[in-house]
Image 1 (cartoon, rainbow, N blue to C red):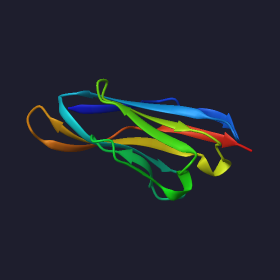
Image 2 (cartoon, one colour):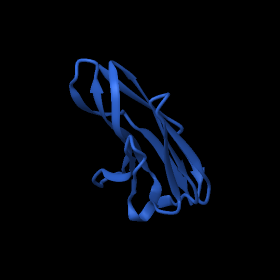
Image 3 (cartoon, one colour):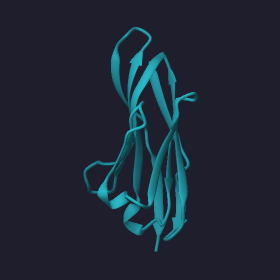
Image 4 (cartoon, one colour):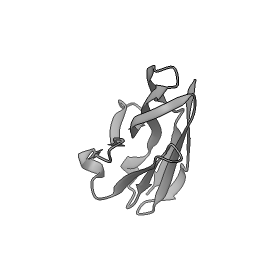
Length: 120
């Protein structure tokens, strides 16, 4: 089993910053891509950013320049630094990863999410 635990969400005023963390644990052999998605009420889940094991990064266009994704492979942890937050960034933020287990199985795993609320 592989688990993802997110932290760092909360309530912040517009223009403020938050840093999300997501730690993977369990029967892990190696981790490929780690990423963040978000889902606002009444909307579909969308990509925020993702980073490969080689360090390649993709951002959704609306997050470029405001959000920064990074990872610490030694800790199986991915971070999302969010600056200049806007009320429309309010959503549940979910961590996602592609991981090879110690049995050699490739799994796609989701965290339970952390709520980010940006007040105007």
